[in-house]
Image 1 (cartoon, rainbow, N blue to C red):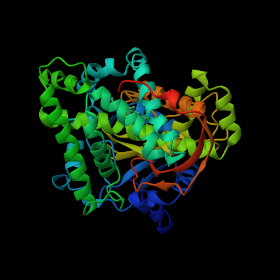
Image 2 (cartoon, protein in one colour):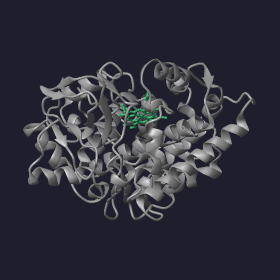
Image 3 (tube, helix red, strand yellow):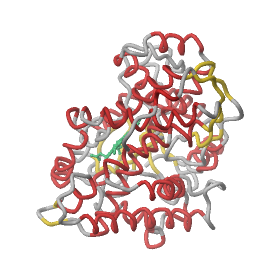
Image 4 (tube, rainbow, N blue to C red):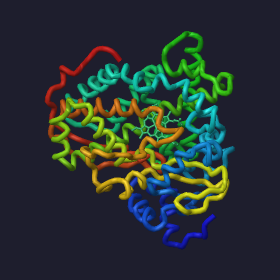
Length: 434
Ligand code: HEM
């Protein structure tokens, strides 16, 4: 373990372990500094359990590629607790579950591989290709409503709603639940944010997590044995170690799919639009190539690299090892900061520049290794369809108010992005269906 940090670096540590810091400050200055000065660095912050912060691309890749072999996601979960009050598992539902191996994202070894395989059909390139028409229909219908208004909160009215509707349709969740689930998810992801808080942060997160889980468990129970083709039905027939999932495991995995399925896509698109509004030449480039899926796909990748919507993931060393020359002891926690890796000048030319024409974009925004994003192809589809529709139907898009960030050190989240625009045409967009 490292020596105690001096008081200057202590401020950085405290900031990165304080979700409200992310609500209105620029954490990039910290990652930029650490990448150069101390790329694998002991961080205590305000948490009881300190951790190693990893900020370089090569080091992060090394950890991810050694999942299960040298690092465990199961031992202490994949995320930093939102604050010290979340560190006593008996008090924190989400934290307790994060240690229990009850969810795909937080499992090691063969059980993880086996469970992941059971969901692959929903998210494979072929499975996702079949969703193309549905994603278009959802996108076009939502956009048609907005075009009539001429302004909107891009994050809540569009970038959040499209992926929410898409993942809800895949899960088989009726529309009557979507707004509640979206609200509860904000409580889970940003429990310190005054906009989402219900009581203190711990109570807020517990309420969000239990409500989403309860909804998934009840819906799955109503689907059990009926042979549906949706993902909640698949959870009722899935197995871990040859036995069916318990209700808690169904709820916790349902929550994972819902949260992962919309939160990160909405953040990528929102950050991308902020950058595009500031770079009209890039908007024009995309508009001129809006029929070209490859151009749109590349733009989506840059939105993911630049925004890195998941700020970090966490692993625990299962043996003594080294990361980037720094000795790490068995049992030490390691936090991988995606922004650090995705703006590492050793890998990216002009890394701080948002550039939709970037050709070589080996970002780690979807991770690599055993836990690489299961929904990556779906996220790419969502983003390409949304971008294509915006470029086709919106003109003169501009900010209509300040951007507001969520208080979360887990998701890099714009929560409000007011914009105004001119509509080319709206009516032709509307299509029948979900
Ligand atoms: C731009 C959008 C997205 C980004 C940037 C993103 C990012 C990530 C990252 C970095 C991980 C790995 C986390 C870790 O190693 O601890 C991950 C895992 C995962 N993602 Fe995504 N994701 C996105 C969209 C989606 C979507 C649409 C889904 C659909 C349900 C999804 C489902 C998952 C699941 C289930 C895992 C866990 C996989 C496993 O542990 O085997 N993600 N995602």
